[in-house]
Image (tube, rainbow, N blue to C red):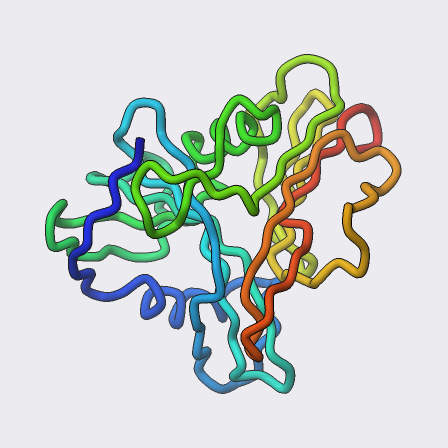
Length: 219
């Protein structure tokens, strides 16, 4: 179970994202500095209790149109070997000390737990409260067998694409869009999905797809 510590962070997560977001190919902002505001998210537990796993949803209104981003992060007490390219930044945690924050799409612990969430072997947890499930996050899986997690991660203008040699593709929707229909109708070939909610700038709630899974040749 992840324990949420009510303490200080220097710099804050939003301050880290202010400098990191413009480096991503899927970033929709303009030339002005981003102004990310928290809009939602959830956590997953690391079974070994060593790595913090958080999916943050932020809205940035600095560009010509507000954009909402899904940012999976992991927090570690020491650098992750071979992941220098995925480092978002370091923070000083008031209880845990120095923490290394990584783009979670490059962290094997997050990828394993995301697969467990889709297979419904793991439960999404509240972003701000210890030991409290987040019931707004819904996962589904119609595929056979376990999801492989030997992913190769690629960012493009549409989001993050995670592929395996076995023909499995997991797409993270980095730029979130409210879905017009509920319940969701997965596209053809989709064998797994994660959906969730976030807060719009006007205070209302929206639901949309966070991630979808495709298996088999051509996925």
